[in-house]
Image: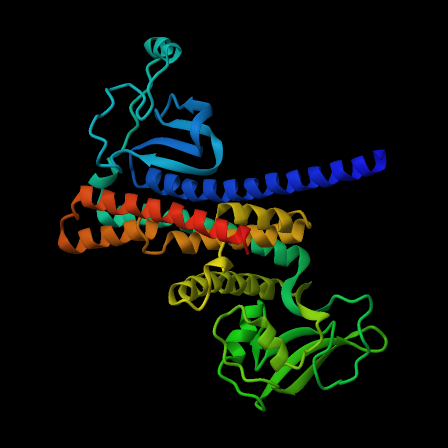
Length: 401
């Protein structure tokens, strides 16, 4: 009984640790995003009232005696914000000179205020700045997310090697090679028709539109009888039409390539490469992640991909915790994926996201006058409601999937 109780406790602690790790990854990515806005805002002389990590009531907060800006750690660790003065035009009541903006002072803070006046944050209000400056500040958050993801990929590829596609086997022992001219379990696929393979979706892109009987050239690494990896080029005749309706049809890819066993599937493996190849591969891999994000959203809009294939915050934390708990390599991989995902998603022209705000700045730049600020605020508020509703919906669908 004690042994089973200990095993159960370890399993629970592992799950809790995975969730904590997942939340930490998301929090770091959101903080980096907002830090991008903050740095760009400081460089371009925007007035910044507060930089917060998390939402809700503050756990810790500190106002800078030098700049007057408030820095806060808040209780809900799934977000954050960089509060630019004047970004919300509905906020008509301005703080009095020397008083901290955005937050009411407690009696204790009022006493401290009398003894030690904080300076008013310097800079211009957000909407008083030129449109091109606002555009730079808006895209700075996504840029920081992407740069952090790229750094993580450099570390991952440098320490563990470049990611390659691998023909995995779920059985106890891989079967003997009966067809040396076809793909087999434990083969590492380097390229198909001269195009490198990083993700399973690469197979879909390369094979799309080809028909049964067409021939493709597949470059692989395969172990010989002495367990030494040997490079080999296979000319494989496709065994099925490759008319894909979505990027998730990996089963059709396997059928076309002659991989019919249920115990065989696509996996990934890392292999060390030279310095410059490592750098180049990390950049290419980041672009492929971004392309996958855009493609999945496109297939969702066109109906080629169902809502149950998506996930909201709860699903993201669940999946991230499972992957991150598997080791440092999976942790780096999922963190980089989330970073690129946030960068791409935030630049989409969806109300409430930075991409839509950039569109409004461009319109103002062209028209020489802004769109009605109240109309813009209403559009962004509606976008927030829709995004929250969508996130809840896809999480609920995942529960019943």
